[in-house]
Image (cartoon, rainbow, N blue to C red; front, side):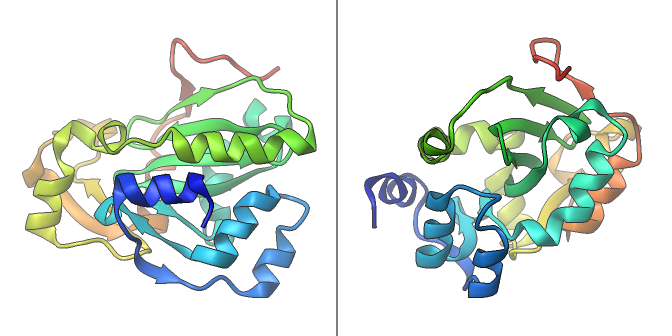
Length: 207
């Protein structure tokens, strides 16, 4: 295990609901995702960390999610994006084939952060490792609700997330009593349909 992934496990704990990654899937993404990520898939599989607050996922399962969020926007023509990680509350981390981790979507508020990046193929591995190293439990714990939600609703499986009902974009409250455990893909597609995706005020924007 390399030091970067060892650091992830040290900070977040061992994976939960781990799934092996088929060799055919690794080959499918051979020229689309960085070699280091494919190496992590091969060695560690897909799974949740921090008791399920952070997930490394199968991008193919989220193709429809990515399409729903960015289709028809400037983001869609800027790069080919693959969702490779997400949080328990629907923070989405997308890898651009040319630009690396240049896009994060906060699904509960339909907002995004775009980073204008330029990397060589050799630098993309370093970019991937930098992303892994920069993950923090606190930054993904929406209003400190993760542990209370886990205690009340149970631990998440690989295809689940915690969602607010009513959705925050529909005027719902961001409180524990309004959280449910839901299908991640279905809920993320639902949220994408509520309003147009907008950049945070501090975000760069694609041309």
